[in-house]
Picture 1 (cartoon, rainbow, N blue to C red):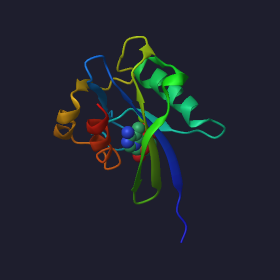
Picture 2 (picture 1 turned 30 degrees about the horizontal axis):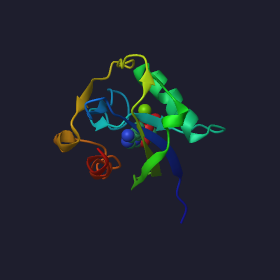
Picture 3 (picture 1 turned 135 degrees about the horizontal axis):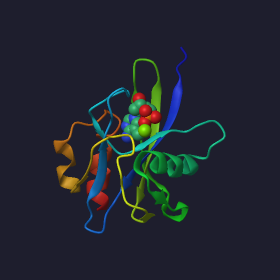
Picture 4 (picture 1 turned 90 degrees about the vertical axis):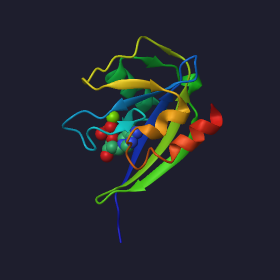
Length: 134
Ligand code: 9L3
Ligand code: MG
């Protein structure tokens, strides 16, 4: 049996009050309407940390700094047509103001309230790690 493995990176931006940013996947994308830790697919030739920097600039208009980037944990999920592998990074320092550059909604949420938001199946198991960390 073969399967397609897709590497996606995701980031928990954490503000000085310990709240975590989640963004709502916009209409027209897979899993539209669900709340996620922002990020996206690693493109050929990219290091995952570069992907994270690129995706957060594209989606949220912020510049995260490489030194703050180390995976906290990894998520995986088997979709119908591919297997997702997704490291979660945590970042407390960035430049710029978060903006929904793709028209998406976003919210800053206390870790113990993250379960109130419907998330993609890969993201849900990550909540417990954030609750432990923060
Ligand atoms: N995905 C799931 N949780 C996340 C992210 C950033 C992505 N936190 C899933 C949704 C898509 C795939 O990974 O099926 C690729 O993501 P994107 O490039 O559409 O953001
Ligand atoms: Mg994305």
